[in-house]
Amino acid sequence: MILVFGKTGQVGGALAGADDVVALDRGAADLSDPSACARAIDRLAPRAVINAAAYTYVDGAEADAERAHLINARAPGAMATACAERAIPFVHISTDYVFDGGGARPWAPGDRPDPVNLYGQSKLAGERAVQAAGGTSVILRTSWVFSGRGRNFATTMLRLGRQQSSLRVVADQHGGPTPAGAIAATCLTIADHLCRAPGDGGIHHFSGAPDVTWADFAREIFTAAGMDTKVQDIMTDAFPTPARRPANSRLNCDTLSAFGLSRPDWRAALGAMFTTAGAPQ
Ligand SMILES: NC(=O)c1ccc[n+]([C@@H]2O[C@H](COP(=O)([O-])OP(=O)(O)OC[C@H]3O[C@@H](n4cnc5c(N)ncnc54)[C@H](OP(=O)(O)O)[C@@H]3O)[C@@H](O)[C@H]2O)c1
Image (cartoon, rainbow, N blue to C red; front, top):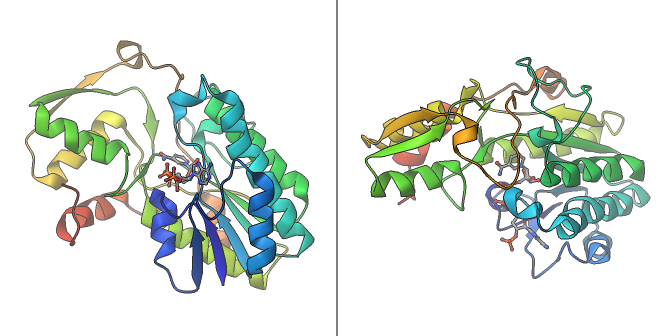
């Protein structure tokens, strides 16, 4: 059995439906008590652990750094230590926001992280805590996660697009939108791989292709939804937020070939959101 933290999230929710997965929600394991996460691993004795839980409120982290650090760094550190002590492979999800967003080249796993906001700092501290635990682990950095459930850019655009005929959307940040379901499938593939080849840990990148701007992504969302909402390009400066965002979130995902994986085309998953049962309302 594979143990998943973060059952109610976009990625955790997609993992929860998979075969051979036991997913825990906040009631079963609260990450603000890192030792409770270690105890859950001890009690359930899984063959692998995937951490899809995180403090993901990027702007909120600016005023709540301590809580972000507890959930994004100390809890994954405790999970990784519990896994290392029991020789259980650990897959931990991280973010493009560990990079400062300079340049236009896609970031490679070995590039130097330098986060520009507190959420990114807390996620980088989580990566380091997982590595310091010393067991078998993969840190999977992803970007711009979307799904038909929960709060994400796609569901926000759909909500706003029903209220307004035209939206102003940032057009100078670039990245790869990534379907939550594809991240879930990738985590499972990597967890299975690590069970067979525990020496293959490390940092990897996984994002959807092609890279676009938020404004381009919004246009694709409205097209896929059959809505005629117009998108007007704006620069980041015109949409101030508490947390700074990196301008270049492109991820070089070449090392995924080690697991027989490559970047998925996010447009297919976006289209499927509107043609399958349970399309976002
Ligand atoms: N969203 C993005 O655009 C994005 C981009 C890059 C990387 N990532 C990373 O991808 C991973 C998955 O993100 P996501 O978008 O699927 O996240 P999400 O939808 O925001 O879900 C977060 C999950 O973490 C859980 N959680 C938060 N605090 C908790 C606590 N104290 N105890 C237990 N559970 C707690 C939430 O539970 P509740 O429902 O109870 O709050 C929820 O299940 C995260 O590591 C995130 O940092 C996300």
